[in-house]
Amino acid sequence: SVFMAADFTTDATTSDTETAIGSTIKSLSNSENVEISFGKQGVRSEKTTVKLPEIEQINNKINFDQIRALADSESLKIRYSSFKTFKSFEPKGNISKKLYKIAEQIRFEKIGSDTFKGVKNNIQKYYQERVNSLDLKSSEDKIIESFESYLRSKFFDLKNNKELEKKLKTFKKELDNKLKGKMKELHNLTHDQAQYNALISNLISEMSLDENFNEED
View: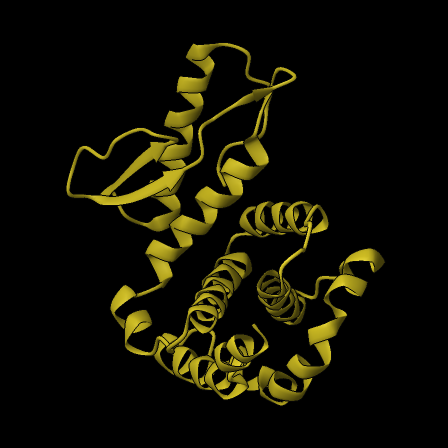
């Protein structure tokens, strides 16, 4: 990102922040054809739309880390991810689709993180804060978060705290069995979206997560 976190206490400053975020998104996405909306703001054009949470003030500080990380991720998606390619390899099943989307997000965030140091810091800091505060109650949540945690740990060399590791360990062994032998190939395909999407889609489908989940229900 080209802007830095700061304290914002007035509506005018919040407006300035929105402008700064918008400029950063256009720069990072390498596209001027982008419209940014915050919270419930409506979309006013046919441009590519980036929807971000409302800029909120908490103890005189805005939710800057969250906004900045999400803005960076959406910018990288515009720059490095083809929606047509993404849809052409999308697997069947509700859970499988969610895992596939996460895998593609990690792919384009990895490219951006390798290219832009500030982006890497923003995304990793936000992910660690989010994942460490998770309250995993449903089996579906545990599957999804375990998958994202596993893939991010391999692509970004991240480590979770011990408490979270205990919550996610149920599925870690299965993920290791299915994915460990393919991680080097996935790494090598990071810049080839079509082959990466095809491979991860097949790996997810082979897990039969949606079928097994429905049987357990």
